[in-house]
Length: 293
Image (cartoon, rainbow, N blue to C red; front, side, top):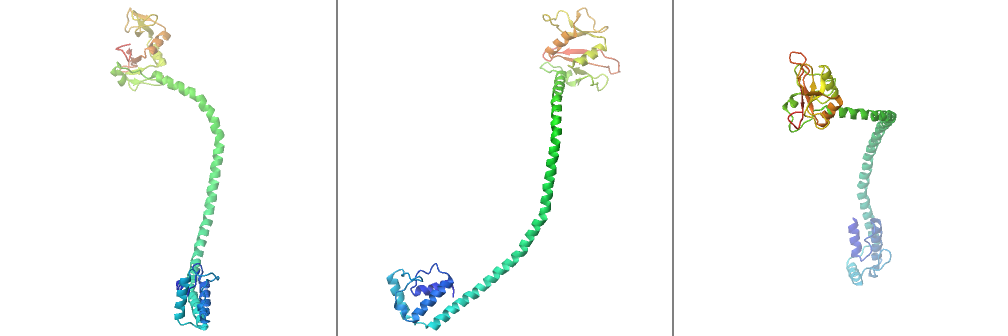
């Protein structure tokens, strides 16, 4: 018999308090009730499995009347019924126990496989740990080298800043009146720069480059008389023997010439050689904000 069938039998016999009982207790309670019916005790007031009174007198009376109308089973019959119910429950439980045992048997290889996988993974984890330890050691060894390199970089910073400043000063100044020749001229920023080809137009603001070009031609720094601005030179030029000689040219010092050159942000456009390779004396100072220097 199923649990619900046993509970139905007990409820029809007026037994209360059976909702929390398990199947073995329900079978015992049903057997006791049926034995009591066989002894003629069905007319007594029905009680629960622990001797508790039933839920209501009216329902108990109705159930007792119904029990009287049904033919009472003898004690041997009741015991046989209980035995059959127990046997049926045992037979039903057997397949469930078999299924549980089969599931446990299937789970054993799976656990063994997982254990093997963990065992195989252990060397890999150990190797990874060793690799991390080696990397940490390498970083620790490299730290002193980086610490030694830091002062060197700090010392090199002023040199880089100076080089950057030199390049900035050598770059041509540009303004609204910059000539087209600025864009087409090769930029010369240091003594190491050389023209790409003979006859190439060059532009620079580098003081050393300008001085080298002038000394190679015997040129002296000069200004045009009458263009001075107070005690400062006016239009900048060079006094070059045999080239652009004029009575208005007045020589000045290199310091005065470069001070004016830098304050006005002038560019020197010049040539080193003509196209045929001969030395060129061409030069022109250009003010990017005015027509000429």
